Structures are given as structure tokens and as C-alpha cells.
Amino acid sequence: MQSLKGRDFLSLKDFSPEELWLLLKTAGYLKTGSYLHGQQEILSGKTLGMVFAKNSTRTRVSFEVAMRQLGGHALFLNAQDLQLGRGETIADTARVFSRYLDGIMIRTYAHDDAVELARYADIPVINGLTDWVHPCQALADIFTLYEKKGRVAGLKLAYVGDGNNVAHSLLYGGALFGMKVFVATPPAYRPSPVVVEEATAIAGETGGTVAVVDDPQEAVRGADAVYTDVWVSMGQEAEREERLAVFRPYQVNAELMALADERAVVLHCLPAHKGEEITEEVFEGPQSVVFDQAENRLHVQKAILAMLL
Ligand code: CP
Ligand code: NVA
Picture 1 (cartoon, rainbow, N blue to C red):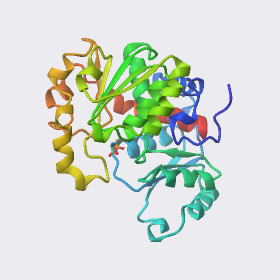
Picture 2: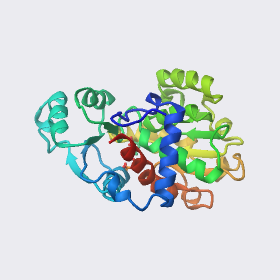
Picture 3: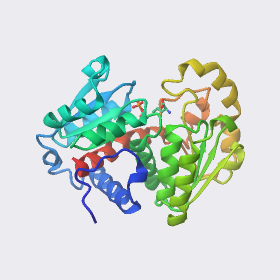
Picture 4: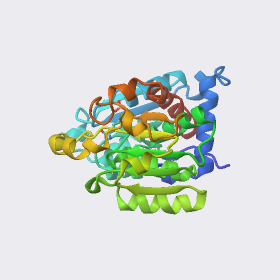
């Protein structure tokens, strides 16, 4: 097994299934506390810079707590407050960061900006969400499925809603772990064909499958997990009315859930807009594991930080 030290974490597709399993196993150890003794030593004296160009509750708090629990520090850096906000280049920012920090987490709009940061930084860059993908989220989601179902390969994961950043990472992650990923979206909001093609190729190697469909019922029928995300992602606020109308038939509600396996779990990356992409009833219902899922961001990110920094 190759060391992950020094690697960037920009997209799940940059990792092999073996490497991702190593991260999940590490997350499991860190969560159960088998390695509790000595966790404070793991990143002792190390500092993570956390650049945020968008709002965040889970990513910000879980990364900061993760660094603290591993004995290091985290710095919250609002992108607008940095000289980046006044036009300093990403390349220069990356090289300056590399002289002070041991790792960078970035949440921003254009994925290319995270890639550019990683290109010029000589410390690991972790993607805390771009418009393109949300890899820490999807890895925590797969960890949650593993905890709940005892396996991931062969599970049917139905993602219903917008073919967005979260859907993209679930396509990559699900394919890498040999899952049957079904994504149901309105025709104009399908995931990128690039991602679908790449995920399909990965699934061909792992025994997984990838299907993009229009019909939420087809996606959810017999599913082991049903996943949704907001209909209006950060940066799309101007499209709100139009999106609410188009996505209405894609709501995860009791009627749709009735088609899933009776032991199916409900996942949502959060924040949720109850009454839009998911009903209050399903969100608060017995199949919902959304807060375990949110907790697992912490454990999975501790594993990522412990292995990469
Ligand atoms: N799921 C997620 O990334 O949440 P935040 O936007 O609160 O970080
Ligand atoms: N798709 C959402 C995810 C938030 C965690 C967004 O990009 O806003």
C-alpha cells in the first residue's frame, strides 16, 4: 500500500478503491477510539488553512474539530478577507500558504481554482466543495452506508434531484466502491456527461453500475439508500423559482420511499430544505440517518488529514 502522505484530495476519482478503503478503515479506527490514545500526537504542531468562498456549517466545524482532536490547529480564512479578494493570484497565494501551513482545505466555486491552488502549493490541498464535486461528503456518505449495511459493493444507491457536485462525487465514489448508482434528474439537470462517462468506466472495473434516468421511481425501486440534496445550490440563488418548479416531481417523500427496499436508509448531505427536496416526514422518519452522516464527516476527514498531512 502506497502512502497517501502529501497527496491532494480534489476528487475521489484520483484515488484507487484500495486507497479509499484505507481511508475508511482509518476513519473507523479513529471513530471507535481504538487509536484514541495518541490521537493528539498525529498532527501535533501542524496547521490547516481553511479557505471559504461560500457558507458552511458542517465542513467548517468538522474540519476545525478534526484538526483539534488530532493535536493540530485550523485557521478559518474567508476568501474575501484574504488578498485573493483583491486580486492576488491563486498561484501566489498557494506559494505563500506553503511557507506557513501544512495543508489547505478550500471551498470555492470554480473547481479549476482548487486545481490551480493544488498545482502551485507544495502542501496537500483538500476540496471542501466546489461547483463540480464534494469528495469529503461522498466519502463520509459511503462510510455511513458501510456502517449501516455492513457492505457497500452491490448496494443500490438512488440519488434523486439535481445532477450537481454531490451527485458527481456520489457517481465517482459509488463506482469506485462497486455500487449500483442510479441518478434521477430532470433532463436539463443531468450530471455532467464527463462524470457519467468516467464513473461508468470505473464501474466497469469494480463491478459497479451507473445509470442516469429521468424517472425517480425507476431510480428508487428496490434501493438500499435514497439520497437527495438541495434544489438550489450555493451560487444558484437567482434560479430559485425556475428550479423549484422543475424539481417538484423529484421530491423524496413517503410515496417515493415506499418503492425502496423496506430497510433502505435516507441520506442528505445537508443543509436540507424541508418541503422542497425532502418532506419533513421522511427527514424526521425512522429511515433517515442524516445526522449520523453529518457526524461521519468528522471521522472521515480526520482520516484524510491524518493520512495526507
Ligand atoms: N454538507 C456540507 O458540506 O455542509 P456545509 O455546507 O454546512 O459545510
Ligand atoms: N449542492 C449543495 C451542497 C451543499 C453542501 C451546494 O453546492 O450548495
